[in-house]
Image (cartoon, rainbow, N blue to C red; front, top):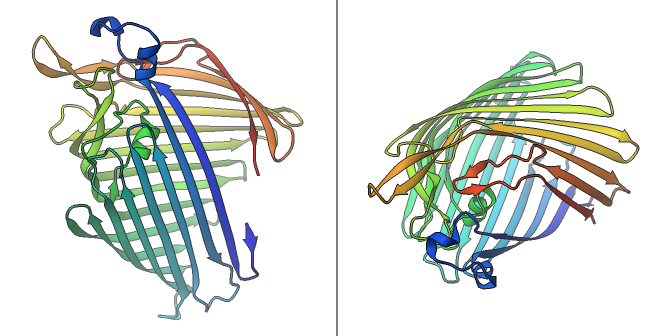
Length: 404
């Protein structure tokens, strides 16, 4: 970070390398010998390079045009595909005086551009998303209101423009303690290889196409607060109408039981809640939970998506520089779309829900160097998040981190 006196500048660089095997199949069923050639054939290596930069004004004067922008480029590649992505976000805002009865009024303009390119061995077309959001913001006593319009252009082999409302409101019931909030809007998202791989690393290496997901209606509202600076919480309900929502299904055309995508129009009704409690300087816990009900358009089930999921994270400082943390996470049943050879038809297979617990130790040598040791799947269970891909039983992972 660099401060010029009127602007804050940031830049960053990140490199990741992920390696894994497609192990969700039985070699004997395909008459495949278990040898080094098979291990090499099932191995996938993904490398990701990220470059980021940002600038933001730091003015004290309200009558100035406050502004900011950030830029991100990433390159993701393996032996079969390359994905390049550019994104640019910018905003300007300024205090205005429409009426004297409102203490704080602002005009805001936000712009965003995203471009995706898959140049090597790919059937994917270049794609872009471009949006502009003019808004007016009002603050009066305990009431806050944001009104605007989101104009989004979707571009691949054809171009489309969509308009969504931007309506956000907040009521402070008790100052800095309790507030109600709500919003009504919509958006368009481009499904890309990076986000899909981060959710499910066992996807096929080369897609024939990747669709845009249009969230026609996104309505949310909830309550959040802080009590005595120790307990904070957020409880939120949401309703979303989506076109072309992606789901992972087992690819019947691949030998190694990889996952492809299928799309459906879906209505999602859900509730999310999180609670954080800081009992002392040494002890903290965070509880999260989510419930989502999916109404499918044509598909029988929301493949590989559970209705209920939750987690509990507890951290405790044993002694100076040594922290211990424990996480319990769980989800209920989900479903996989599996092809039945006998009936020559697809059917829904139940993936049983599970609960798991991990324990980790962290040693903070200084602000830049630390070491960690994680004990995962303490109960040693064999459960499934993805169909035919059993989790590892009890295992230990350790390492060092260095920040610069």
